[in-house]
Image (cartoon, rainbow, N blue to C red; front, side, top):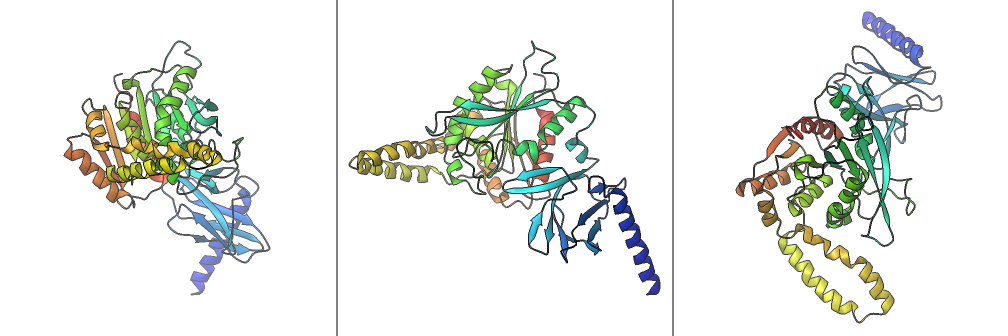
Length: 419
C-alpha cells in the first residue's frame, strides 16, 4: 500500500509540474503520445469537471486552487469541452482561445493529430478564403436579405479565367451559415484535401437554412435570437423552394462557377439532409452529386397529410375572406407557408423522375446507433423499391459532428471525377 501511495504522489507531482510548465501558454497541452493535459485555476470552488465530446465527464484534481487533469491517449479527432464548476456553472477554458459554437452552446476545442484530426488543423498548406455575403430574398417581406458563407480555394484569385464546380453544403436544425465552418472545419478540410490532391478545387457554399432567421446570432439586422434545436417551420418547404431561385442564381452571378448539372453537388446533415432530398427531387436536372449525412429522411408531410392541409387551407381562405382587412393582411403574409409544403407532394414520383437520369453519386451515410437510422432504413427501402441506385456508408458513433466531418472526408474525393 505504501508503494502504491508513493507512486501516486510522484505521479501527481509530475502532473502538476508538467501542467505548470505550460500553464502560461495556451491550454490544453496535447503531448506527443496523444495524452492531453488540462489546467484550470479557481481557488473559490471545490469541484471541477471536464465535460465534452468524451465518453464520460472527467473530474479534475485540485491543489491550492489549480485544477489539473491528464487524459489517457486519445484517438485522433477534434474535441469540444467545457469546465463544469461545482457541478452547475459551465464555462469555456480561459487558457484556450479556440472557441466554437454548436447550436446554442459555446465550447472550447482542441485537435489531436493523425487521421482524421490532421485534416481539421490549420496546416502549412495554401489557404482558401471565406466570405460571408448577403443576398436578396423575396420569401419574407420583413426579411429582405439572407446571409451565406462561401469558401473559395486558394487558387481562385490566381486563375482569373478559370471556372469552378460548386458544392452546396447544408447544416442541421439549430445551425446556421457558420456551422460547417466552426464545428464542421470545412475550410481546414478543403485546404488540406486540395493540397493533398484528395479532392478537386471547388467553391463551397453554406447558406442559412432556418426559415425564420436570416443569419447567425449577432449578425442579423432583424433579430438577435438563436436557432432552436427543433425548427418545424424549416421543415415545411420554404427553405427548399427558395434555394434554387435565390441562393443558386446569386452564387452563379457572384462567382466563376460551372453552371451545369455535372459540376454541381449538394449535401446536408440531419435537417440539411431532408432539404437536400426535397431540393434534388424537385429539381432533378440541377445536381449530379447528392450527399445525405445522417439525414432527417422521412417528413411528416406525407401525401395524405398534404391533402388534409390543402382542405384545411381552402376552408381557412374562405373564413379569412370575411375577416377585417388587417387580419387578412397578416394571413396573406403567412399564407405561403401553407403552400410551400408542395415541395414534398408526390415525392415518390419526383424521386422516380430524378433517377430516370440518375445522379453520378447519391450518397447516404449514417451510424448504427443514430436515432434517425430506422427512418433512413425506410428511405433506403423506398429507393430500392423504385430501382434507385445509391451508395451507403454505415458507421459507428452517433448523431454527431465527429461523424459528419468524417462523412464529408469520405464524400469529397468522389466529387467531379473526370469532369
